[in-house]
Amino acid sequence: MPNPVTPLLEVCGLKTWYPVKKGVFARTVGHVHAVDGVDLTLYRGETLGIVGESGCGKSTLARTILRLEKPREGTVSLGGQNVLALRGEALRAYRRTVQVVFQDPHASLNPRHTVLELLTEAMLVHGLVTRDTCREAAARLLADVGMPDDILDRYPYAFSGGQRQRLCIARALALGPQLLICDEAVSALDLSVRAQVLNLLQDLKAKHGLSYLFITHDIGVVQHLADRIAVMRNGKFVETGSADDVLNTPTHPYTRLLLRAVPHIGIPLPEEADVSSETVPATAS
Amino acid sequence: MNRMAKETNILRRLWRRWDTRLCLLVIAVYCCAAVYGEAVYRYYRWTDQTPSYNQVHETARYVAPAFVRVFSGTPASAGQPLYLLGSDNLGRDVLQRLGQGPRIAFHVGIITSLIAIPLGVILGCLGGYFGGRVGSAVVWLCATVASMPGLLFILAVAMVVGQGLLGIYLGIGLTTWVSVCRNVRGEVIKHRGRAYVQAAQVLGYSHARIMFRHILPNVAHIILIAFSIRFPASVATEVFISFLGIGVQGEPSWGIMINNARLRLWQGVWWEMTFVTLAIFALVLAFNHLADALRDLLDPALRTEQV
Image: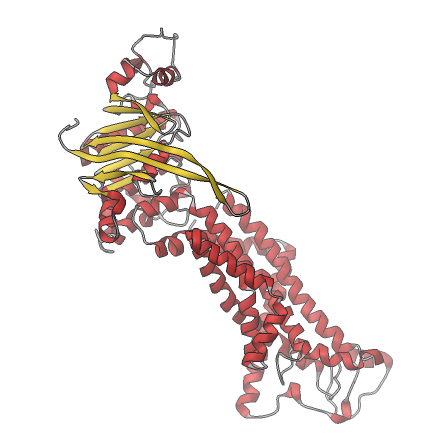
């Protein structure tokens, strides 16, 4: 359960703009305001769901926190440390603390590396294991994500989307992170596999004491995973609150719109019904 | 199936088609000829004799090929070599000189590739991966080198380092990396945005590790194709430069033979020119066709990831 005392990640007034270039000399004629002033606090052991439609800046927010994009303004701090100024060993330490699982499990794994290489390279680079012990470490990671350890010498193409996503999660866990950013991590999976992976994430959270920043366009996915939900639109948070509040008593019309977009099974629900309990997929037990 | 199996699989698929099998066979024959030529060359150098392919027979100039003589009924004079493919203006055996051609051709093809491909790959990787200023610098360098006429550059290099093979190696090597570089750069840009590269960045790998251990193996097919395209091109360039007289000296390169054969071609001494041209034609055709087949085989296969 969330411990509201110690914030793990704090984002303050974050703006990430992409320049729009035109003409022969690629003059900057304007900016796409992908992330336009976001404040966010993530507490230790908490799952924060970020919901919004495609192109609203969710992924850019994640990429900025991961230092894959340079922000224009604002601060990101982890445990009181300014993330955006990190260099060298401090940056490597940050890499060990914050990891990511991307959307497309087919593109996320290097097709030329075996499972063993995929899982142990990071640990070797960060000096967490030696060549002699890395096989056992990889087997432990595979056990964590519920895969057998006889696949260590196989290549990613031998696995299905769900299995690959488990491998991605295992790779992200290799460095023992405290915060796992899931950028549409289950969007590319079909419904039954999605439920399995979500349950796996839930289990891992308890086992490793993880915090999640869970980014999705599908509010149905976060509703049984997130402690708090932030609704994003056009680069800004339009509504933030505990999951129950946001789902049951949405204040912003956009949130209501998103909630109505969740597909339902069975009789169409009346407008004010308790949406959260009704829309869990049948397989997500 | 692992990496090794994949590579042998490509070879097997090339072998299964009759046309590419023919190409492989032709290239294999030339390889053998090159090794044989190198052995002959070394032998004569070691024993300090005039190589048999350079031996002058003043009495046997412009002897027609043996099979032509059989048809026309000209008797062979006593003590004269057989001259299966005739003799040239100094009575040297065309067949033996022809056999030395692959040696020089392979030297040029391989050594210029060893200069051009690493240069192109490293610059292409840097330019594609970093983009921005580094990328612009690489593009600028490519454009600058490409805008110079290649032959002029090779001539200039040959002037600086002196005549002979070194000038050819450097001249060709330093001009033909541009296409390799552009291809690699384009492919690296494609891969840079993929999630596996971003995951590698998030995992805290160094740029060098991401470039050379993660991206490079995925663009390796470009290098293989580049090699099979530029090998025959550099062979042809060497022939042309030697023809101009600034390349190989004192050794029977194909270009020198063509230059030589030119002198009496109008008097009906057709054999030297014909056989040299055929030899070059077969090698270049085999390589070009193989390059095409390789591209067909490798490019779509990797794009759809069906291994």
